[in-house]
Each structure stands twice: as C-alpha cells, then as structure tokens.
Image (cartoon, rainbow, N blue to C red):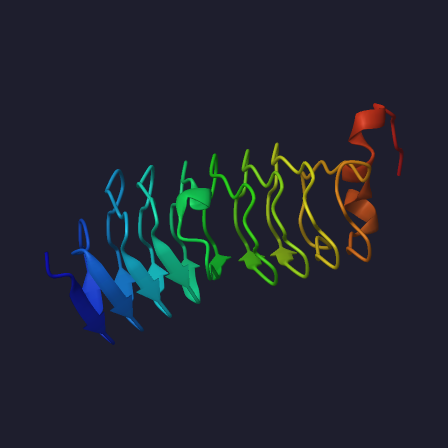
Amino acid sequence: MNDSFSDGQIFSHLKKPEPGAYDNCRFTDCDFSGADLSDIKFLECEFSSCNFGLARLHKTSFRDVRFINCKLLGLHFEDCDNLIISFEFDGCSLDLSSFCKLKLKNTKFKNSKIAEVDFTDADLSNSLFDDCDLQRATFINTNLENADFRTSFNYSIDPELNRIKKAKFSLHAVSGLLDKYDIEIEK
C-alpha cells in the first residue's frame, strides 16, 4: 500500500485525509468526525474550524500542530504516536477528551472549553491554560509544575495528588485548589 505525502497544501471541506504524511499543510472546515485517522502523520500542520469528534487516533502523529476553533470532542490523544507529540489549541472545544499519561510540556491551551477532560498521569509542566473552562477536568498524578492557570476557571486541582510547584493561579480562582475540603470562601 502506497501512502501519500503532501507538503504545503491546503485542504478544505475534506471528510477523511488519505493515509500518509502531511507536512506544513492547512486544513479548513474539514469534518473528520468519526473518521479513522490511524497511522496518519501530521507535521507542522494547522487545522482551522475542523470537526474531529470521536475520530480514531491510533498511532496518529501530531508534531507541532495547531488547532484553531476546532471541535475535538471525545478524543483519546493517548492513543496517538507519542514519540514526539506536540500541539496547541486556540478557541477549541476538547470536552470529554483524554490526554492520559502523555508528555505535553509547554502545551498551549487558549480560549478553549476543556470540560471533563482527563489529564491523569500527564506531564503538563510549563503549559499555558489561557482563558480556558476546565469544569470537571480530571487532574490526578499530573505534573503541573510551572503551568499557568491565572486566566482559567472552573478547575478543581488537588495539590496533594498533583505536582504544582511554581504553578501560577489567580486569587479569584484559587478556591479550585481547595475544593476537596468542602469549605466556603467569601470575597
């Protein structure tokens, strides 16, 4: 089976990319919902206004990939080829997705909805969560050292179950670090 190789191309309204590698490509308004994206390699690609809902990511490669205004619902990023995995999210919806056990140092999450996402055992050190809704996101045994949560909200992070040394939080949302104590904090 010959896999295709695309370099510097622009794809629009695509339903499923051909198996192969995509280097420095742009994808706009593509609907990959429910698609099998297994073994496809995306290198330095940008996805804009694309839907990945419930797509299969078995050994999919994402290296230096940017997602802008994309729907990434229910994805299992831990199934990706995690040899070198790196991406950033801006204006995305990542609800019900999972990043379990991934090394995602320096990852940028901006203006995104990250509800009920599982970050168990992930390394998110030096990552940025800028204006993100983290309602019911799971952080257990997660490395959050030097991570920046100052503009994010609705998070609940147990400092006893996670590594949070030098992480940054804003005063108005610091109660998310005390949720397990069921105390009332008045302003």
